Image (cartoon, rainbow, N blue to C red; front, side):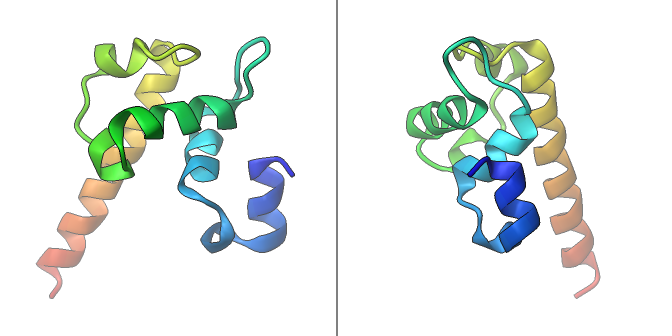
Length: 91
């Protein structure tokens, strides 16, 4: 089941980190679906937290992950940082 379909049918909480990252990546490349790219990136950096804070050029070096997809990941992490900051300020 494709990650986006799984999210729709089973909810985001039932998706793996790789599946959620694949949704952000969007599309893969010839012979490599987005989920394969996501798995490789997570293996390279260890965890989602390990992926956080990487430079755009560092992310874009991953096979199948060019500048646009790297920007999407960076934007998702910045949104996460802002939500966490907001939650910290409200407690």
